[in-house]
Length: 403
Image 1 (cartoon, helix red, strand yellow):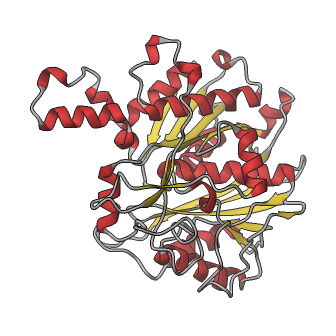
Image 2: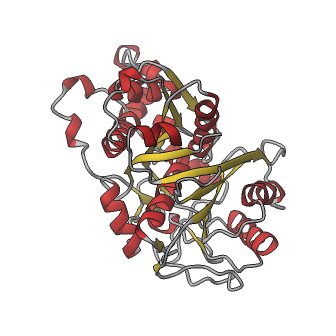
């Protein structure tokens, strides 16, 4: 069976306009987060990751004036990914577009204004596009239209695992021959009072902590995670097709495994059993060069990562978390972790977990400073609100090796 390979990627993240800037930030361990105090119940400070650029490429065209921010972010990342892949003949191929979205437009200003008008019974002020603003799949279809595709278009929504599971679905369609090319992405813009209030209620939002202590992976003093926004897109093809068109292959999607904790909706699984099971299956007795972890500063989640490291890898394999730099962009994080892993493979380094002092996690092999070395295999862990776990295994491309 032909391998599923990556031939292009694009990214938008806090302080990150494109993949070149993403490389620089990862190599140099740049903190792209900031503290704000306008989102929380009593004006407490919290940490967020905001994309501050105005997406200037879309501003001259009035057709995009009413597009939600999520769609614009996904369009920009998708445009870069297609350009990177040098795919120019989309109309002659069967294209599938798969996007992971968790909370969608909850952080979009226009959507928030529409909700306010509803509560104030201002029917005339509610825009005709209000239905699309609240529909996750309208985000994906807008991106697909902008990229020039009319074929299979799917939206996956499983919380923060959404985009990793979008890759999982796309690989199945590629291997079965239903599609020739998969444009796979993830996007979310969650930063809002609604999200801040929700996570403050569950005590996973850091309140009144500085950047030294808040939203720090693998740090027992961290009281929660950093909400951020972002988008990532990769181009997937079968190896045979990519070689036929002489594409540059950036890496291989070796395997993705997902499951659910299977617990009551308002409870959490503290054992980490299903995450351990998913990672065990994706590792398949292999030791990667490092684990690109979902650790984000929520103690329960990070302790589960610690359990995975001990039980499956005996703390011998290096762990890192890019969320220390860019925060957690919800449904986009999985695919951004994949892109960071591909960058790591192609540029030869392990990105650091910045800001952590490893308090409470001293037994783990946590990478705190950039390590420059050859990278061939990376495992990725991801957990979503709602109990889904997803793990991936990404490999450097070597022609002729069996899948």
